[in-house]
Length: 263
Image 1 (cartoon, rainbow, N blue to C red):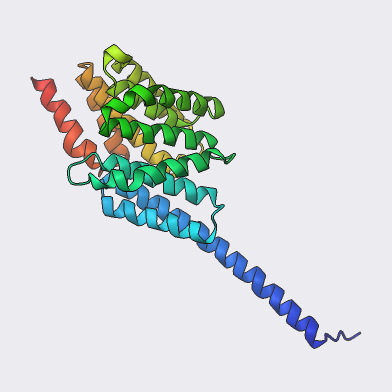
Image 2: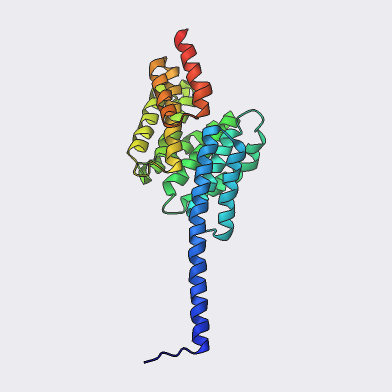
């Protein structure tokens, strides 16, 4: 029996095919852009390259223009904004803080409203507030308790969120002992973050790879403060074994530890 299709049926079929094909192409394109953004973010942090970080930020912002509900792109955008706030602490990058602080806060609060990124959003917001304290120490009076509250919530929501332990470790490292700071507590938190990263099934994820390196770097710094230079050098060397071009460790932290060990 010969099937005969009328012209309207053919037109509808063609239209459906085009829509499905375009949707598939957009999905593939989005996945590739997200992957590219993550890889550029990782390289930017390893090299401490502001321009590369801004490039990654632009990729995420562009993705959100076409899909404001893309939680993964929103996470990438907020993550890069938090890292730009970190870079604002370096000489010559001061303007980055005023440019990105408010929108980083707003985006972190949006992340908290999503199921997938609730814990990540809270740990990012805690880190963003920590950057506020770094630029305005008096803000610690009102923000410190809020930061620890966010980190408690983040850990409850996801006990395997390494970022929450990193931020808590940094808080313990940077807070004066009189106000609850402790290098020993910092070591515990960075070791916990390292353990989580090592056991993560997403070990190849760009964010996890960076958090692993970051934890090792801060662990080494904490050991230096405790006068345990051998442990510090071991942590630094472990980071360099994973990523030989990790500039902060290679050119600053490891030479500093080696110099202190000789004195």
